[in-house]
Length: 378
Image 1: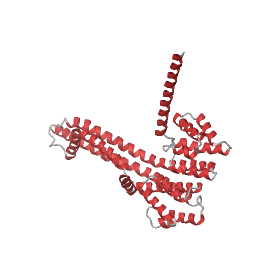
Image 2 (image 1 turned 90 degrees about the vertical axis):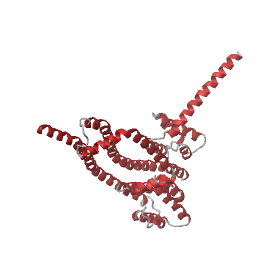
Image 3 (image 1 turned 30 degrees about the horizontal axis):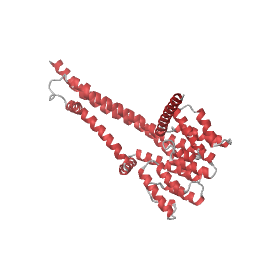
Image 4 (image 1 turned 45 degrees about the vertical axis):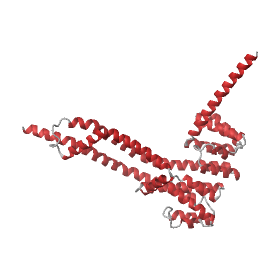
């Protein structure tokens, strides 16, 4: 009898170990993978709707978890529900998922809980996340097409230089008699063939070192500063940063977050180290009772229009009618610039391809045509 009891205990311990291992795997997956933008917008909107209907946050999370089909999202909702059962509030539960929720979103929810305006805050958050994501995706979409074309062109060039050109050039006996363009093409082809492994190796090393360098504060600062100085693209990136600054700052202040905490959160939300350090300087100015617009006045990083709108806000305290309107203005500016870029990049890419293909075609066809002329004359 005691042997059976001992066996049952062993089996029970084994099951507990299995459950613990699965729990650890689930926790790891949750910590690595977060909510997508689409999932987050739906989460904020549905949660706000259920709170408006009188459903508690804990019950709302339980409902969302049961109807969710995505296992990652389902586990996140389940874990957050368990945290609420343990006595934590929503903002404290969100802190445990840094890959899903930003400091700005957590700050707004925390302020909404303190002011008993959580449902309104969640609705505003959904709109804010949606708008920021929309404008960011428009810029990414504008960049995808040229990068895809350039990648394909680079692949074609590598194949031609390492495989096609050496075989075609093999039909000629003497390289000295070939035209200059053909000799240049042969030189490039010989370089690719001789050093292709060396090139791939150093490209990999350069990419690896660059990514490590970017993680350091100095590297991140210089890279972000370089991005801002690129013609056209730098201006586009600046407008996106200003839009994020205005929208997140407006949302935080509207939710009741203190101005010092709002500035700190916004500095992390803009996604640029140069602007982050400049925005953090505002904290010290505010602590010394300096007005925000006075600190930003004559600063090239912040246009006069934005400074004036901040001045109006500080005089009237109407956040929604001032700073949030600045975000809408820059969103429209980004839309216009992306549309213009799409129109300008297409002919530029076509010309670039025509030049490369034309040079290769001339370099290959010219000696063949010369050979044909020699044969016909003979």
